Length: 475
Ligand code: ATP
Ligand code: MG
Ligand code: MG
Ligand code: MG
Image (tube, rainbow, N blue to C red; front, top):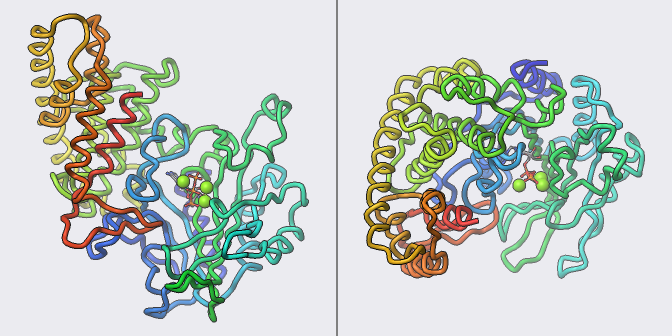
């Protein structure tokens, strides 16, 4: 089944169950000061769950463009290194607003996966909330357990704690237990080694969470206490790329027909092959992931810039350029050339991509052009700095200056130093970084669950990414 059919089958299935199919909300959020990017399918329905507005439709389904690079959901560190976390991804979802509840949500999820998509039921595991002994004193989700027991052997129903199996919108508001569905894609040899159940929620690359069914049945009051909601809701989210991996018999999202055209184009541009060298592979995955995030953001009208959401997008694109520069050895703009390939694959489902293709291409090419110049300039400055260096250790503060003032990535500095037989004074770099961190702290964001709460009176300056990037790059 190709990805277009997989997406269509999801929407058709829920349309058949009387759901209204709606369009994805924009990925870049313009009118919510607490959230920069859509990070889950439910974001656009937040007001319904909060009880501020009523949904015109009691049942809705869609595919939502999501971006997880900030706040509570920041997967950036994983992207490219693992094969199933992306920056931008599609989340398929179905919702009930005070309509159906656990029984239907569970049995329809099962029906879709095993009868429509024909996933072998033996490869599926589900998790159920185990309850909590903290101040909430929550009971285990016996109801969900019993519904699952009717369709799957008990040894494949696992208990999950609050971290994985209880969803809250923030420190107040609607919340409830969830049930996740995981798929075991291991080979027979891999399976012979360990029981799959022990690998659920353990970040095993081949035992993967695909679908989260959230049962919203409580409201957390401002004093922290939970009260049952008069109307109960269902909120589900399934990773589209992961589903395609499971259905296409491959072991990495990047081996699906969603990413293969991008990867093959990259192979053509670089003359390199995917699957031969881990460093090259990571770079190819990073670039084919990041082009999607950047292209979809621009299609939403968010151009790269120096503040707010635009800054996040700029950093994502620069990260891709740098991976190309360092690991694929490309010193001229090339990422923009992926735009038509992406449009070809996704323009039908997301017409904004086709409509904005020329703009997306131009913006990316320009950004590449100017950042590559920065990189060249940085190289020169680095050379000069080394000439003045006594001994074989580069001053960490100098490296920080290059990073901070000229945007010259620290891992690139480290790499070049290594090639030239120098090392980096990492402690000095960290100290300079810490000092800058405390300087910018007052303008920083405080992360609260799914929503980023900005301190009053501060600009929407994004600082987390810089810090994350620096610490990751030093590894
Ligand atoms: P994980 O534990 O794998 O990080 P999650 O529990 O954070 O996933 P949810 O918030 O439950 O994810 O989102 C619903 C679904 O969206 C997940 O079951 C998964 O299939 C998919 N998903 C979540 N994060 C990503 C991502 N970064 N890239 C691709 N798919 C994702
Ligand atoms: Mg996650
Ligand atoms: Mg999870
Ligand atoms: Mg989850």
